[in-house]
Image (tube, rainbow, N blue to C red; front, side, top):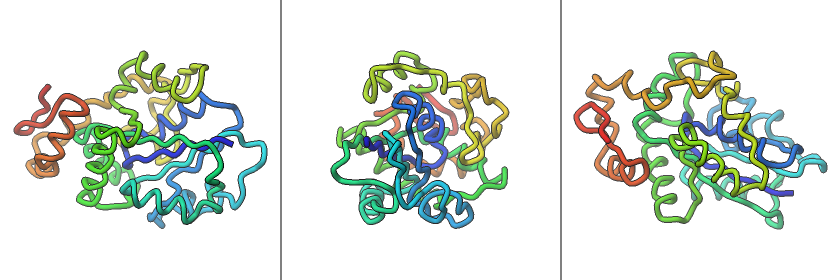
Length: 241
């Protein structure tokens, strides 16, 4: 069995990419979402729930995709090792490990909008800034393969490139799907299911651009990392390229 471990921050597009990625590999795929969740408000996910986290992986499963959210990579690795048996992971299985990363300005705009729809985030924004920095540095330093949600949304050639890391067969049908995990989009739920590319995911920051406290979320290190990864930062309360 092959294992794909996905590290991400909540609202980084990880559900969209994870489900799209599942279509790139063998049909017998099992997804364990938010495997190490600390959010007891959503027990259907991760180790606190049975449905997403069986004690044993069915023998017909050929690929296990296991996601972690809002954790430093070292924390996630330690947790996955500790709970490997429960999650169905084994050190002898071939494994690919990736980080899904989104620019921080649209990411945190989506995180801010999420609770308004009745959902709860697992960690505070200040904690998650640390996680985002950790993930960004891992991608920039080359210690972890990174999938950019921004580029994945906008660029067919980029999606083909990502797909080729996992399989020889490209299937882009999942690009237009909005999945129910996590309630779908922070702003639209599953309203855009079947036409996800129409969602203005690169303009979420505009909802909070006039709020002084939104700009304060992003210290100099966040801005520098964002520029290195995405080519833009925040100046005043406006996105610049």
